[in-house]
Structures are given as C-alpha cells and as structure tokens.
Amino acid sequence: MTQVVETSRSVVVVVTIPPMQLTEIDHIAIAVNDLEAAIAYYGEAFGAEVHHREVVESDGVDEALIKVADSYIQLTAATRPDSPIAKYLEKRGEGLHHVGYRVDDCAAALAQMVEAGATPIDQSPRPGSRGTTVAFVHPKGSFGTLIELVQV
Ligand code: CO
Image 1: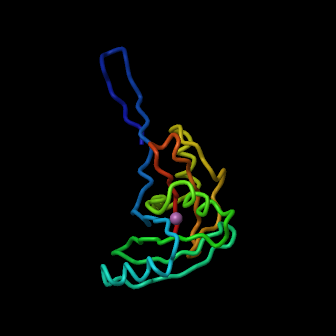
Image 2: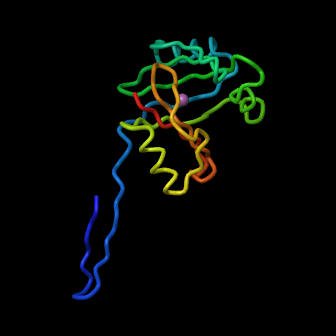
C-alpha cells in the first residue's frame, strides 16, 4: 500500500507500507527431552490429545502437535544427537524453542522480513511437517526469537 502525505504545497512524502503477512499464530514449539513424558503431562494437565505426530528426519525432530483452536502447541524432541534441537537442548535445556507464524505466501513473507533487516536461516522456503512450506529466520535481528514462517 502506498500512502501519499502532502506536507505542504511543494513537498510530497510517499510512504510505502508493506502488506500484513501474518494470518495466525501457527504453533509454539517447545523443546523437550522426553516426548512421551511431555505428551503425558499435557494430557494430565490440560486434557490435551495429540492431533498429529511426525518425525522430520531431515531436521532430526520428533514432534507431537496439540491443537488449540486454529493453532498448535508443538512438543519437539530430537531424533539424533547432532540435530539442531539436540544441540539446543544440550545448551539451553527444555523450553520455548520457536514461534511459527502462519502466512499466506512464505516466499513473500521471507523477502519482506529480509527487507526489514532479518537474518534468514533458510534462504528460500522448504518443506516442513504437515505438508507445510516453511522458512526459519534467525533470532539475531528478530529481537531474540527464532521465527518459523509457515505456509499451510
Ligand atoms: Co516449528
């Protein structure tokens, strides 16, 4: 969207407002050491049931999704000791790992983030779990939060 602001008879300022890319919080990912224990805890604490289970071997993650309205809590464990999630658990322990922002167009959202100064981890969108298209953006440059753009 372009907004023309007339400040005086001779000076015209053109302000470009980029389109809103976010449509939903897709998921909140929590890194856990023991996926079965975390699933059992969410069951006992919230009565929550697993909506989707998936191993993403390329990322070295075993994940369980709990549906909350149109979003998910993604309990995430490592499948191998050299996976990024395993290294994260070793360094920082269990806890909030990343936030998945749902977008209509992953490539467009990534380009807009980079334009705004973000540091991409994925240079272009790639396949994620649930048949989604995703791209990760580094916490550095995004106020300390690992962001995953998720196109459903
Ligand atoms: Co994720």
